[in-house]
Length: 94
Image (cartoon, rainbow, N blue to C red):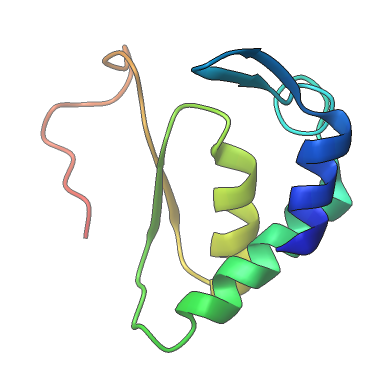
């Protein structure tokens, strides 16, 4: 997606060989229009692949995963980094 590449090139800050700081459009401040377009792009790619859920980890991927799930009209599942104090251990994802 060209817009994402342009945004990363313009606004991303290389911290080191392993970290690209993108907090101006993804982490601490969210460019909602860009995330919506990413969701549209992902949904178009996966629309004929019988997707029943979108899954992400508790991270920067939540917003694009949300917009993708919304466009695919499927649930979004977020895997937590730590066990939830309120989620029972018997919960099954269908």
